[in-house]
Amino acid sequence: MKKLTLENKLQAAKALLEDIKSLHTPGETVRIMEVCGTHTVAIFREGIRQMLPEGIELISGPGCPVCVTDQSYMDKALAYAAQEDVIIATFGDMLKVPGTDGNLWEAKSEGAQIHIIYSPMEIVALGRQHPDKKIVFLAIGFETTVAVIAATVKMVAQAGLDNVFFLVSHKLVPPALRALLDRKERQLDGFLLPGHVSVIIGEEPYRFLAEEYGIPSCIAGFDGLEILAAVRDILWQRKSGTYYVGNQYKSVVASTGNPVAIQLMKELYEPADDVWRGMGVIPKSGLRLTGEYARFDAERMLPLGDMGEATPPKGCQCDKVLQGLIRPDECALFGKECTADHPVGACMVSVEGSCAAWYKYRRTS
Ligand code: SF4
Image (cartoon, rainbow, N blue to C red; front, top):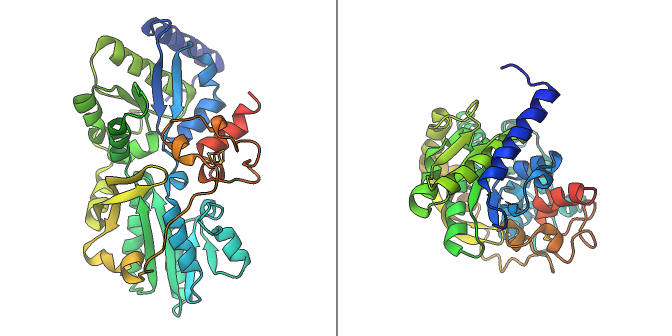
């Protein structure tokens, strides 16, 4: 595809903003939730909020995989980390996510065996290197990462390893959108749908937004023009009363998604109720290893017993931030007790977290 020059881009942005203005009624408030944390970062980076007419609000939603991983999951990870014969394998961004009593970073400094990995495939080697240990991999993430982790589970099975387990808390985006709409805690007039997740699942799983709720939505990429085009699409749907799942990321998102990844997910997992940070249990919003792969499920194979109640950090309002009920800077701890260097809650820990994005960009914009 031919690359746009800066001048072409500016002209295209100007034209999109003209359209957006013409589709918006002055004085009307339109709240569009950007579901994906990468969109939150892109919206700040490109200065999209400042470009939009007054009244069109972009609200950050529950689209950061680390942030929505519940406190109780971190408590389980810490409980496994405390066992002498367990090695925790995890991506680095989970280390500072708070559990009720500390985090994995602190556990590591106190001697827990925590191995930071860069690719899930590394756990096959880890399992072979430590046959006398149990390897517990922290398997979190949205639909985007499920396929690659599913492929890893298969590799572990093919390698004949019986000491590798997966602490699974994958999250599915469509049930979370339904939960947000059913709770009716905040007016939402449209969804900017996540690009990466949509590459896997396609357009189909979002159709209920239009058909059952009469809510416009549009899949977008991460370029400023793609985001503006998606906002225009959402406003057009509102104005015309014609609702569908728009797609401004057609270069990589097919309407049917990625059939190989979808098949892999179906082969290894079954839908399960799952708990989201601040949102509680959402029906069928998670996945559980099933069939012959259930033997790799850490919670089934290495039960922890009663874990007690998970308590979030005092004063942290990630629960409200993740549901778009408050802006990060409306949390009393934002920029004071809670900063990028000293994060209090999960939304400040992850680079995709709303609080981290607001902290990085908002303070200077
Ligand atoms: Fe939690 Fe910090 Fe965000 Fe407040 S600013 S909601 S304490 S992560």
